[in-house]
Image 1 (tube, rainbow, N blue to C red):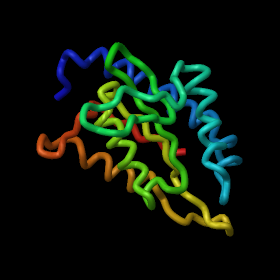
Image 2 (spheres, rainbow, N blue to C red):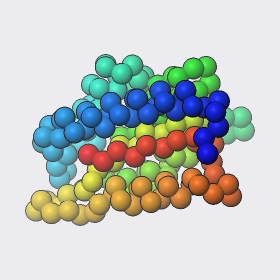
Image 3 (cartoon, one colour):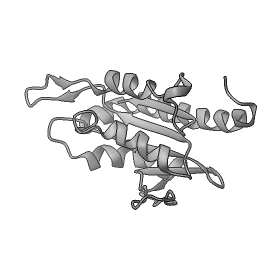
Amino acid sequence: MIPTEYALELAAVDALALRLASHITETRDDIAAIHVHNAKSLAVQSHFSRLLRLEMGFGEEVVLTPQSGFVTQARPDFFFRLSPGRGVIAEVERGGTTTNNHDLKDLWKAHLSPDSHHLFLIVPWNNWKADGTARERPFQLVARRIGAFFGDPRREIDVLSAHIFAY
């Protein structure tokens, strides 16, 4: 059940998510050309930067307010401020999505940051071997892992919504 005080915020976040999902569909051929074996993660991030930063108004590599008691400050790939103290973190992952637990680190970043309550996690359907076959399929695993933190009060975190996008 969604608390009524968050209904408008969630509608705004869902509108941002819908635009991102449409962009992935509209540019799938461009994404396929840059998401190849041994490609640099920055190439994929730059593709999404054109939409998130230039068209949608996300900040890139923004240092967020530190959480009291923690030494590090979150610096997500992208951040969108919804209102004071409320925002969306967007992270673009590639090779280390699940092998290096980047998906869980991104969720942890959103949980610890007092500025963010929503996570957009942009991950590959597949990561490729040199011969062009799939090495791993991160999206399915990420959706299951992130989903485990929602729906049961015992496992809940301070993230109101998580949207997982596959490219």
